[in-house]
Length: 155
Image (tube, rainbow, N blue to C red; front, side):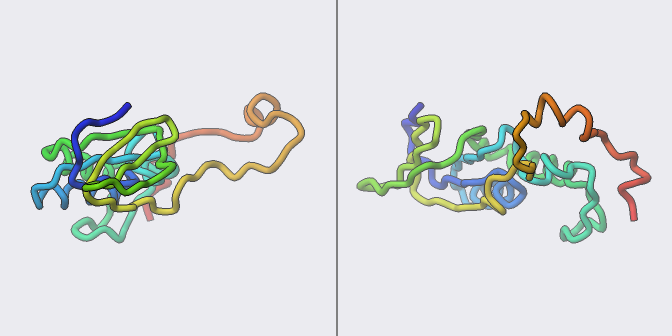
């Protein structure tokens, strides 16, 4: 897919910093496009520890990671950013009057500026190398996914 319009800014990374960058660009009258390898916005906050309390966000004595992401998404909404999720930037080239970002799925984005807000970059579970399939042989017996009760997430 190719976007015909040229964005003022392309933001690589849809974590908290990327979402706040959408807001800041919007306040300056700039339209933006956000590209992230994950399928959802929020980065590590949304994927790895959504229930975890965070204590170092200005204006919030305590906020959960997911609530922070939700607030940042809501703050960015009025500026109607274009989200390109589940794709990562493979190449950046310079055109005559803009940059062109190409993703792994063939999406082409033209922009006047690029901001990299990738945090720690692409991430996934650190699984040991096994000779058997992790998902079918071991995972059902060794990993439990659960949501912590609120009493466990407070100091």
